[in-house]
Image (cartoon, rainbow, N blue to C red):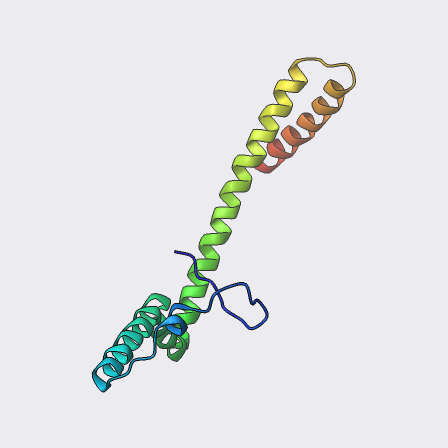
Length: 124
């Protein structure tokens, strides 16, 4: 369910549901309306997980540890993704080099030779 924000700038949008509720007349209706409103706010706060966030802010070492783990995982993911991407590009270049295209084939063959030399130098 999408949330719409209501502001004074846009007059075409209707106000939030809380503002559209009729004004209760009796005290029992007022208590019931306050209960529904409070229950709605409580659900929204639970959805935002504000309690977990404030607990995390009160424990800075846990926050540092979680950020360190997430940064490491992101770095490893980027490295693995780049490896697959580079391997795919090299494979495509080798296939294009094998086709012996007039100008592009020589250029691609030079690139493949350079990459293979670098790989050979790094393995010994």
